[in-house]
Image (tube, rainbow, N blue to C red; front, side):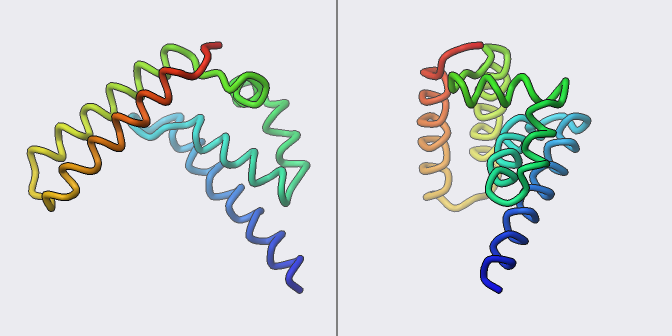
Length: 122
């Protein structure tokens, strides 16, 4: 029973993140690749056929393979992510939010940007 529940959980995560990734293809500001990475990872835990399909997909496969093989992030994606994180931090400062959030979130986003720019490029 526990094995079936675990399998169902991994498949649910894979489906939801795949759906979010596909939506991200057409909705500006919603990332695609991070959701596809999570989908492929969770599919590998509970749905190997979906993982194989994602890796073989002509559009989704190449960035997933680059990430798995080299941990690589294309420069264009780095720029886009940095711009989006900067805009998010600036918007947070303009709107009403708790002070702790206005301090912690920009610091966290800065740490993510540093990590991101240290990744190899495709």
